[in-house]
Image 1 (cartoon, rainbow, N blue to C red):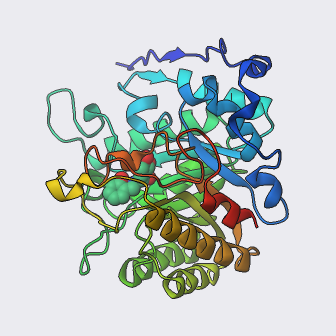
Image 2: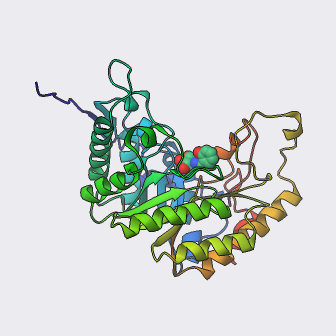
Length: 365
Ligand code: HAH
């Protein structure tokens, strides 16, 4: 018997998203009238990860003043946009898409296939057993087709596969239900489905810890093999979750050089620079973590790190087609909870009052 899918589609509520309402936003939240996007107009678009809520607060004025591209931080992830098999929730993503269109901003989609922030039903049959390769491919195709189709013409680029590569030295792909149920070709399939749904979208493989010599070698290999076997992949997204002590200039330079040599698009998709020393694994907070002030020393080190990064971004301007910050200001960052739970971080160019930090002036100089 034919299975009838009843898809509940929640459409955008545009209430509260009217740009004319922005006139109520205090104009003194920032001193300069020129934004990052203007300073870098001849280089690359400058983007920011946003939540639907941020577009209804005073942060909205900062976003439109500083940035010409956006990425939804969470609301296009599988668990948010497709929480149940027959239920899509487009409301939040729609409101971000509408804001981008109204303000003539680019929009990146994040992300179609990932091992995190996925709902429980995805890998299971109704009886709780693990789905077959065929069923999971069918679900992946249906999801990608639906989501990519909906934002066709608004989302110009997609992070198609996120974080498929292992962080372990001797392991190539990350163990995940995608890999164990479908096999290695789940990556190629995701790109094919996305390309079929929107042949004009720019399709990225996106990953973190991309400046590590071991991991970048694996990313290079994966993307090169995909490209050579005719998979419709257009670019590499380097997340860029960095810190005051990592990567070094040499490390970042050689990574950009290596990826640029693939002659694909290259973007920094999730930039932030933590004021703490880099740690890669999540852990609980300890007494030693109590020093969480944004000290002069941290400010200085972060400024130098941002300066170095943007020097190199300018050097590789021909290869780079976008730099996106992961969150807007130090008011809120995902790093407030990662890798150390509940430890305040200050990783962005705007402080908690939405004022540009010293690092901002270093970046735009
Ligand atoms: C990124 N992962 C994700 O791409 C993004 O969707 C999320 O909002 C924040 C960061 C980085 C990461 C992780 O999730 C787990 C361990 C290390 C790094």
